[in-house]
Image (cartoon, rainbow, N blue to C red; front, side):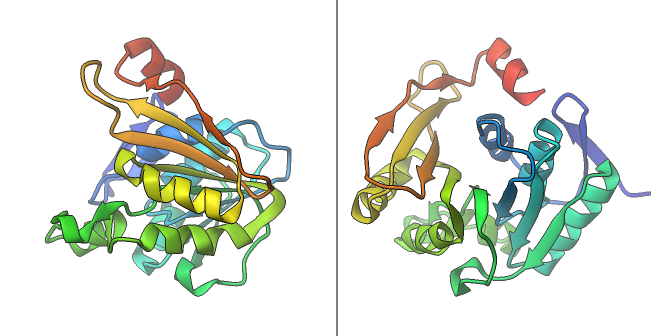
Length: 225
């Protein structure tokens, strides 16, 4: 029998296949504003499918799709969708090759963000693919994702805070509105995570939101159950 674990207060069941997903995609989907019924949503770099499936639980009238370069990941996402009896369309493709997908009303992405040149490596090839990339490749991801959006669509990201300069430069260069919300996981330390969303529209402006105190029990309960 396949081992499983649950998140969102037991509402979402996931196959316990290593590496386990972090809480990052749960925070990401908890902060996506309500989408219109029938909205097409893509979970890019889906891994286990946790972002797409948790958003489906929160917003069951959307049409969810998931993409990953690794066929083992898209197969896992499909199994997790079946475990939860949730509808999910999967695509196995490299997002950097501009697959013929979209347009999407929203794209969710927890992209790789640890710089390989800074020594963030692991012997696990799946974790390496999921969490690290060469310097500057975040811009390549953003350049590939924005054309897949509906003209009024939004790209929702959760990143390491060190990615902020590259993200803000991209938004300014390409004239996209950008909203940044730090996610503070410890009361006495600077935020290490950054929630962001870019609009496909223009002109560019930068909106800086107050940090979410993710270390507080009441805030975690509100967002993660």
